[in-house]
Image (tube, each protein chain N blue to C red):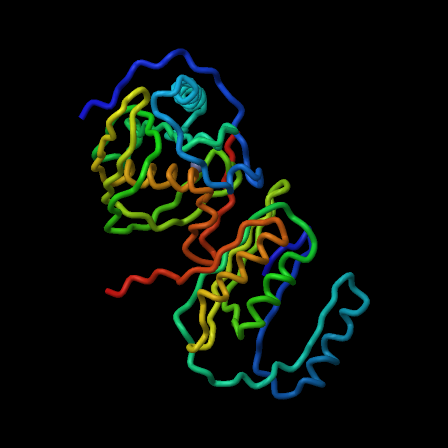
Length: 134
Length: 176
Ligand SMILES: [Zn+2]
C-alpha cells in the first residue's frame, strides 16, 4: 500500500478460483472515484535466484522515475519483492529489494543503474543485501 | 589522544539539503595547512555548534568542495570511546569491522531517518587543521558510526545510499 501524490494505491496477488465472479462483485466500484483492475498473473517460471539485492534511488521528484527504474531491473529478470517510495518536499526516495536469476551479472546491472541515474539526474545504487547468518 | 586545537572564530553557514547536487559529489583533498582550510574548519564547527542535536558536519553540507569534516559526539548517550570536538582533513578509513545496525539521521536529510549497518570498530587517518603529519584515530560505537557517516558525505554518499532494505527509511517526526 502506498500514497502516490495523494492517491492511495495497493496491489494484491491472490489465488482466486472464479475470476469472473470476483470481477462482477467488484463492478459496483466503477461508480466510485476508485480504479480496480483484476488481471491474471502468468505462472512464474521456477528459476534459481541469486542473493537478494538492495536498490536505492533518491533525487528530485519527476514523473517516470519509478517506471524507468523498474523497467531496467525487469530487463535483467529482476523480481522486485519489496518496494517503498517516499516524497517530502522535492526529495523523492525509493528503496527496493530485488532478486535476479542466479546467473545474473549483478555488477553489470549496477553499472546500468549508475548510467540510468545519470540520465535521470538522480542518485541510485544496486548492492547485495547484507545478511547476518547466525 | 588530544585532538583539540585553536581555530579562528568561524561563520555560521547555511546547511544544504537533499537533493542538492553537491551532496552527491565526492570532495577533493585539500591542504591541511592552507588558511582557507582552517577557515573552513572554523565555519564547520561554528555551524555544528548552533545546530541542535548536530554531532558532525561535512564540508559539502555547507557548500564547500573539500575533504574536511568536524565531529563532536561527547554528549551522545551511545558514545563509548570519544575524542572530543575535532576537525579531520583528508580522512581515510583504514579498517572498519563489527557491523551493527542503527537508525540515523542527517541535517541534510531533515525529513527522514534510515536503518544503516556500519562498523562499530574503526581506524581512520587524517590531518588536524594546521598539521603536517597525519594522525590515526581508533574508536568504536557511536563515534565510529558518526565518522563513517561524515566520510560518506565527503565521498558523495548520504545515508539514503546505505539503507538496509525496502522499509529501512522512516519519516522523521517533528515535535513542536
Ligand atoms: Zn549527514
